[in-house]
Amino acid sequence: MGMYELIKGEDNGIPDPNKNSVSIEDGFIEEELRLTTVAKDETVTKVPSPPCKQRLVSLDVFRGITVALMILVDDAGGLFPAINHSPWNGVSLADFVMPFFLFIVGVSLALAYKRVSGRANATKKAALRAIKLSILGLILQGGYFHGINNLTFGVDITRIRWMGILQRIAVAYLFAAVCEIWLKGDDDVKSGFSLMRKYRFQMMVALSLTIMYMALFYGLYVPDWEYQISSESSTDSLKTYSVKCGVSGDTGPGCNAVGMIDRKLLGIQHLYRRPVYARTKECSINSPDHGPLPADAPSWCQAPFDPEGILSSVMAIVTCLIGLHFGHVIVHFMDHKDRILQWMIPSTFFVVVGFLLDISGMHVNKVLYTFSYTCVTAGAAGLLFAGTYILVDVYGFRRPTMIFEWMGMHALIIYILAACNIFPILIQGFYWKQPQNNVLSLIGIGS
Image 1 (spheres, rainbow, N blue to C red):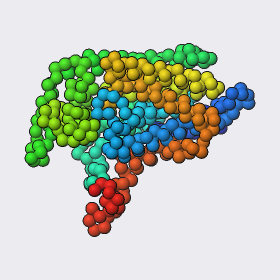
Image 2 (cartoon, one colour):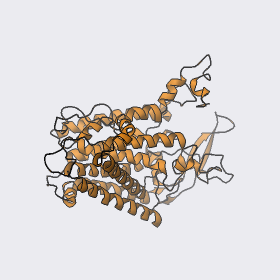
Image 3 (cartoon, rainbow, N blue to C red):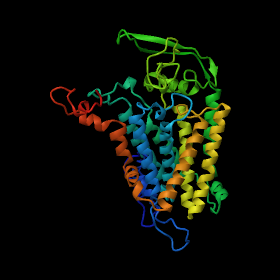
Image 4 (cartoon, rainbow, N blue to C red):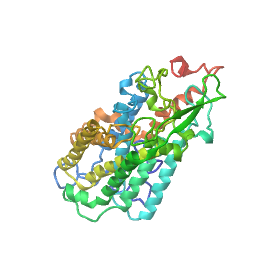
C-alpha cells in the first residue's frame, strides 16, 4: 500500500535505499516492496553451495491471501455475521486481516533494508512514503467518497475522519522502518539467540510500546462524557447523550481509555461513525448483525468510535515489529529447516499466550487492539506464513497459488478498487437518464 516505487536492488538481490525507494505498497503496503522479497541471494535449498538465487514467492502469496480474505469479509460479512468483525470481545475471520497486513509489511521491510548505506536519506524517503500513504488514506476513508448509494463526493473538513486503515499502516511502516534503519547491532547471527541479540534494541522498543499501551489502557482515568447525533424526527436538530464513566481500566465500549484518547486528541466529530459495538447485544436486537436499538440500550450505543485510533495503533506497530523479526529470519538463515523452526516456535508461543490471557480476563479485542489480540493474530500470521513458505517455496506448489501471488503483487490497486468501492462507484457513475438506472442497480448492488 505504500506508495510507489520500491527498491529494486542490484542483481544480487540486495536493495539500495539510495538508488530507488522502498514502496510502501505492501499488503496493500508495497505492492512493489514485494520486489525486496526477491531475495535473490538467499539459498532456498538445503545444499549450502552453490547458492540458489530464487525469489521468495511466499511473501506475495501471503499478501494475496490476505487481500482475498479482506474482500471476502467485506462482501460476505453482512450475509454471514460469523465471519464479520466481532462486535466487541472475541476474534473472527475478519479480525485477522489488519494484523496480517501489518505483519507482512514488517517482513518485507527486513528484506528492503537488508543493507542501508545512507541512514538519513533512507529515513527521509520512508517518511515521505508514509505521508503519501496517509494522504491516500484520508481521501479513501476520510469521507470524501459517499458510497455506492450516493454519486456525490466531497467532505466537510470539520467532520473528516483523520484515522483509517492506510493511515495506521503508514504509521506502523514508518516506525518499523526507522527501527530497522537505525537499531541494528553488529553481532554475527548463528542461532536464534544471536539473532535476538543483534536486534535487541528493536525488541526493547516493542516491549516499551507494549508497556506504554498497558499503562495507559489500564491506568488512565476516563471521566463522564457526552456526544450529539441528529434527531430521528429532524436532521436539523441534535440530540445529546451522556455517558457515565468515572473509572479506570474499563474494557467495555463506553468507558475505555482508547476511545477517550481519540475523543480528546482527534475530536469526537472526526471519529468513525459506524462503530462495531453497534452490533452487540446491548445495542442491537439482531446481534451480531445491525438492528434496531433495544429499549434499554446504553447511552454509548450510537457514539462514534474509531477502530484505527491512536492508542490502539501503538500495538499495531508492535505487530509490524514482530513481522520485522520474521523477516530477519529470512535474511540470516538460509536453510529451510532453520527458517521454519525460527518461525514456528514464536508463532505457537504467541497464540498460546494470547488465548491464555483471554481466558484469564485480558480479552482478545480487535477494536482496542489488546495485548492478547496482538499475540493471537501475530502468532496466526506467523503460522500461516510458515505454512505458505513450506507449500510454495519449499515444495514448489506455485500453480495452485498463482491467483494469490498475482493479488499480492497488486495489493494496493485491488484494495482501492474493491475494498474502498472505487470500482463500483466508477461504474455507477454511468447511468441511463436517471442515476437509479445503472448497471449496479440492475444486478442488485447499491439499490
